[in-house]
Length: 427
Image 1: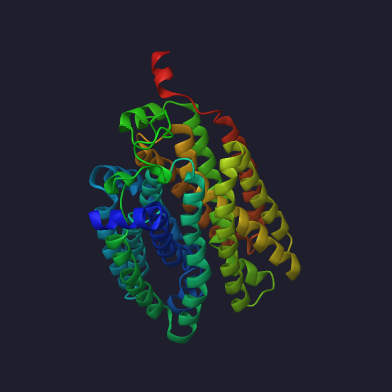
Image 2: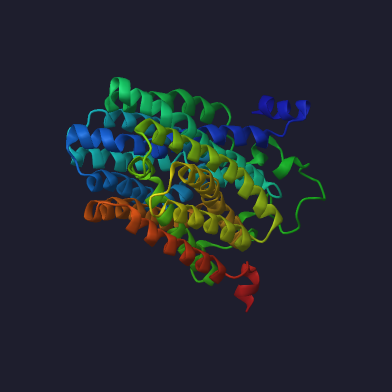
């Protein structure tokens, strides 16, 4: 530990940026393996197993729901037991469950494996990553979280076409084996050698300032005792802000996931080839990376609700483009617009928690908000498949999701402005 702490000081590199790089790698796997790649499996499973598209879509609904249900628990574990221990155990389990998916022979087994996979991936995903980076950064929190979240998009951009190629040449079973081994090969050394839960473990302060520096914020964020840094969960649950934030991040992910989890078949039905649709999925993920960095920085420059409104409105515009069977040029316009704004959602969720509620119970409150996100993800992913099965088209689902985005904008404005919990208690 002492040897590690001396390196950043001697070289003039703040160790927090190395933690950002490690979190990038973990989210690369969390999303590329656990989330983006699933769209590639829909048609192969439909053809080889004879399952309906709605039944296959339910797998990801289960995945998102389980992730949301265990999210508050993971947040509590990260805060009480430390992120490194939680991440190591989760990475081992995640690789094992990906490989177990290759043994699928029945729909029930597939659902069960993805439920277990959801639990494991949650422990190396957004909740522990956001909790760690919120401790390492204060003034540059938006940029740090945005850069780390680019790993989500990079995972989709790189792993989606790779998994698609393995599917075509070796089958979907080989793809699951590949993903499991990849998780073990990357996540385990990254967590063990790089991850540190707080800058205090290395004698550092947030943003790379000197621990005794008078520039440290007087509000106590960063090194002050946790009880002085914001809202506890029970108190936050009684605020309008919590329900406005929760509502917004239930609705926007519902629409986003309803589109994104069906983007490959949606684009195929709009006239693209299967390979072009897979490429478009990768480009969407890549644009999402730019959106994560962009919205991470935007939040540092403008009021939070303006940034969230822009994010949701751009996605709604992308959905409008896809309505009515657009020509190929418009399809790629949708990919660029929707992909960029999509990237903002996952950055805005943890930043909303820090913005409205501080760090006192950051992981637990984030887990509660992400439970709402998971329910929205589940509803959206399943609704698209069900509506397609009923009507033979995605147009009705796209119309629904456009309205959902407008409701998300109204919800984030209903949250109001951040309030001081100590003033509330004295009132």
